[in-house]
Length: 318
Image 1 (tube, helix red, strand yellow):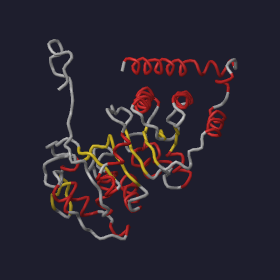
Image 2 (cartoon, one colour):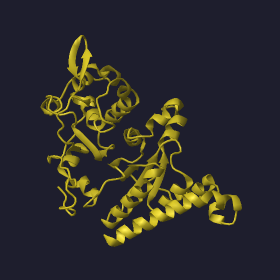
Image 3 (cartoon, helix red, strand yellow):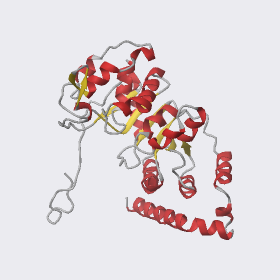
Image 4 (spheres, rainbow, N blue to C red):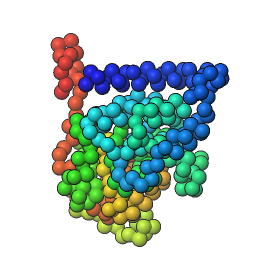
């Protein structure tokens, strides 16, 4: 761990140095490496890295300020023995040339993708909406976009104790092609557990979503699952159901309708109904509304924090 911390600190220093000096180096033309334009440099990198045949990997959404954490996560994954391709997704040019260089120098099995640029070019994302996804809403869009069939979505600030590829071997994943994790039970009147007026009645947002979803657009009929009807959120006990810091999906083994519904939720529904704190509820609800089987970890969410009295308990985690 001390060695890992030293590596992270060195990367952070290099990152700050490159950002602060790259403009000068480009202007003076003294450093051949820096004098290559961003596009030329990326083309040269991509010539030597063809990952098109890889069907399984880890996906992380990033922007410039998250690069130190993202770099730490990459080192952490490799230290735990993970060898999977890591895709770093960003939106509309959020990553600078310096950030590209840091990431590509850090690991050979790493790919950087500007999903907003690709979706705007293909007509799937209006240019005027692109910057709306420079946030946690990027993650569902990235899952829809990635060519990978088997995907583990990780947040850049995740702290891992085991190689997450073990999740591909769990019973729930083998049965449904998904592994979702519960969020904390939050008994507040917000998000899924907040109230809206629908058909002149006060209804929970989750109930409104299930009642008003455009099932016919996906050749479906309204059919809530027994699982949904047992959830804490459905029964007014929690504002949240899913935590999205780790999401595991086999796109190749599940119905494509789930990805179509996910795209619809992030592109349209989230603008009209405030049912989710960021992206977290979109994943399980996409599968629920698409009537595609999904699985949650059987374990409840736990939380860790430092105690209030740091003088008496400086080394304690609760």
